[in-house]
Length: 359
Image 1 (cartoon, rainbow, N blue to C red):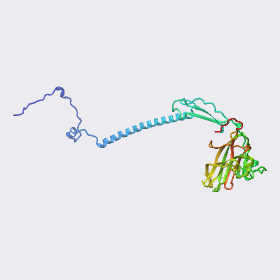
Image 2: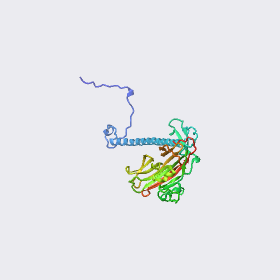
Image 3: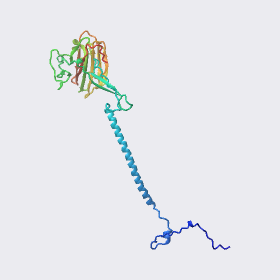
């Protein structure tokens, strides 16, 4: 069967375009297929990557700017916070967040205030953690001159091998710029290398004093030799032996000596048959030094003689009983091996004060 010659597909008129477009003239030598049949040109991979790289750099710069701004705000906030805390800590009185009670009254300066301080307190009662302290304390020296007395070494009793300072507050077994005084008196000690204190104690006497001990060893102390002593004894027994704490003398003694078996310098207390080691202070070798203060409490009303280190009583002699006056004695020994000095730092007389407690 022959195909029909005239078959037509009718389209709606609105689908038929009657607009004529003026196309640009093709370049000289270009074919029709070069212009109208070629697809639109696409960017190469290198071009696309280059574009993306530039966009990425821009985003990185923006991100770094944002991070820098955040970091700057953080450090500014931290600085303000630290300044605020410092202001609170150092100026609690004016900071509204640091709420304090009024100061308490000053504590009373009593005869038992041995170390001469009085205190007052206040407490924090504001919001938790507003300030770093919950309580503050202030102190000041007591105006207790009425209890002070002038304890010195009695220069008239000074042994001929010992030396005193010009104010009679320092005794040493060596001549020096400070200890250059050595009077020759008929009452000087003949056997005991030291001096007696200028005050002897009657019944009911109560005194407190502090002594600074210093020594420097020149030669190895490999024998049990004395360095110094502070003791209490009857006046007529003091000059009989080198050591007042010896039982034949009957005194009450704190003494410092070399302990060759320990290779140390030792501190002990001694009275009669009692000889008790309390501390080791340093090596016994040449070049060793020591410098420390000790406190001494004599209460003849309670018959006690106490020794203090670092503000605490570490030993007390009980039953300090004698019908005689008891005198303080200070010894410095062995100048060929060690330079020793004792210095009176402070002294107080509490005699007549009722119910005095030392602790």
